[in-house]
Length: 114
Image (cartoon, rainbow, N blue to C red; front, side, top):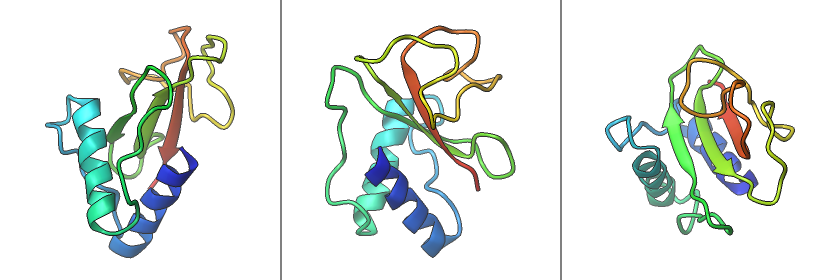
């Protein structure tokens, strides 16, 4: 997650914006794959990182000027379920499909406010 975050910030520092949603906005997995491919194409990553557990990563760029920005979501299978997230998760916030405060689960969200 740290390497993905660094790659996103390097991309932002160069381009002035985060990678766009490429999966039609509704598919977090397709958005993740598309965003990671953009980072690979721009030489910030060498391969698409995969979840070492049984889950998958999601990406969604909510745009600038809000409390989410470009967000990566992972599921930490070995951690206890929570409604607040594992620090420094940007969870909780409302109005989203993931990382909500009204769901007790293992989601970890890393927000890139821009």
